[in-house]
Length: 563
Image (cartoon, rainbow, N blue to C red; front, side):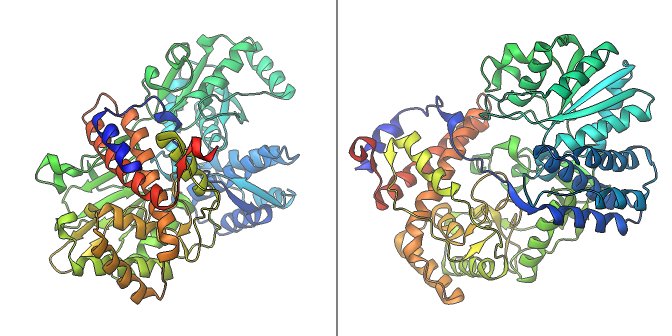
C-alpha cells in the first residue's frame, strides 16, 4: 500500500536530486491566426492617441508579430522588424509614429495561416517594463561606439528593439538580430544562420560590443549561455559579450551543466526592480513580505516560492494594493476576470490598472485558516466554484500536457505508473482560480471575499485552461476536508451549478496533489539555504501524502507491476 511506504518517506529528509526535473511549467503557447495578429495591430495603430499605455500595447503586439514571422522564416520578417523598431523608437525617444506608413507596411505582409506564440513572461508575470531595459542599455552604451544587439526570442524581439532604440537615441551605432535557442530547457543550443554569421563578422570588423538581451535568466541560464558561447565559437571575444536580463542570478545555482564556470566567462547586467511603477505604489510587499502583515505569528506563514511571486506594493496611505498582472492585453485579461469575480460579489472590485499593475482597495480583515471550514464557509467556496464554472469559462482547449504532468511526476516521486486509461475529463472548461488555499479568503466583517482570483489559472504553471474540477480538488485538499465535509462541499456545488463532478473528481484530486507536490519540491530546491526552504519542504511532504492516497484511488501501480 502506498500509504504504508510513506512512513519511510516521512522519516527521510526531502531529496532534491531530481527536483529540477519536476514537471510544473506548462507549454503556454497559444495558436493564433496570422491574419488576426495583423488586423489587431493595424486597428491599434489606427486609433492610437499618443498615450504611453497604448504605445506599450502596440509595442508588445508588434514584437509578437515579428516573433511569429521570424520563427516561421517568413520573407516578411524584416518588415515586421522595422515596424517593431518604429514603435520602440516612439516609446523610448518620443519619435513620431506615422500611422499611414505603418499600416501600409502591415498590409504588405502576408501572414502565416496560424502561428504559435508564448506570452512574453517578463511583461506578463515578472513586472519587466520595456523602459527599464532602455534605461539600462543607455548606461551600458556609454562606453561603446558600436553595439550588436541580439534578442533571444520570444521576448527578445521587443527587448532588442527597445535596447537598439535607447542606444541610437544616445548616438551609439546599434543594429540588431534575434535568435531562437532550442533544445532541453536546461541545455539550450543556439544555431546561427549564414546570414547572421555574416552580420556578426561585419559587426566584429566595426569593433562592436555584443549585447545578448532576454528576460531572466531562468533557472538554468542556458539560453543566455548558448547564445554567448555561439558568439565565442564564431570568434567574438568573451570580453565583448555582455548579457542583459531582468534579474540577478547566482551562477552556482543555475541548473545548466557547469553553469557557474560558464556564466562567469561573461559580464551580466540586470534591470532589477522596475522604476516604472504606479505613482502611489510605495511600500514593497512582494517576495513573501505581505505575510508579515497578514499573520501575527510567523509560524503560521504559508510556504511561498518568493522568487516566483508577483510584484506587490501598498500605497503610502495604506488604502490601495497594487499587484503586477501584466502589460497590454495580458493584464487586461486578468483585470476582466477580477472584475467578473467582483460582479459576482465574491471578490474586491478592481479600481483600475496602472503600468501593468492591478489596483485594488486594500482589504482589512481576518485571513481564514482550515479551522474556519464550517458549513457557511464551505458553502461560500462551493458557490464561488459554481460561479467560476458559469462566468469564467475558457474558450481555449485544455492541454493534454496536464495528464502528462500527472504521469511524469508520479514516476519521479513514487516510481508509479498511472493507468493510460486515466483521463482528466473536461466537462466545464474554465480559467481556474488555481489558489484555493484558506489564506486566500478574507473575512472583512461583513462577508467572505476571495483574494488573488484571476492571475494564476492561466500563468506559466499548470493547470492552464481546465475543468472546474481542478478548483474543487484544490479546495478539498487545501482546506484538508474530511470525507463528510467534502461531501457537503460537493453537494453545495452541485446544487448551485447543476453539475455532478463525482465521476471526474478522483483524477483531479490526484493531479492537483501531484502538481503541488512537484511544485513545492522544485521551489524548495530553488530556495535552498533560505528560511523558506523548511516551509516548502513541509508543504512538499503534506502534498506527497495526499498524492500517495489519491494515486492509489485512481489505480496507479508500481513500474515493475506495470512492466
